[in-house]
Image (cartoon, rainbow, N blue to C red; front, side, top):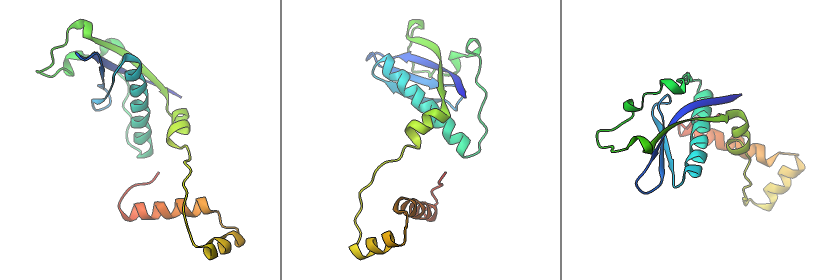
Length: 147
């Protein structure tokens, strides 16, 4: 399902861009170019919504683009002209993005004694599953939540 949220893009003096999502607790990111800022905004949006969903938190409804109030995001120190600010809808299919980037398996190389390897292979043990389960147990002991 496609998620779409308004984002305020600020063109910085160094020609980079700062991006703020007012509906998402003022979540922000940036990029050196507009293209990079948009890519970072998509990644940021996907990650934030993915985490909200996994932690069973309320996902806020997006404000219609014509109702976004830029003045609520401005700091006293900001000196942006109207030409330096734009509001753009950023969209992402969070589930598809998660499959591609967040849930993608990574290959790890590890060492163990040959005798242990031989016994585990003979027993038909799935090394990846055992390692994943062990890591989850260790993370939970450290009070780090696993999805």
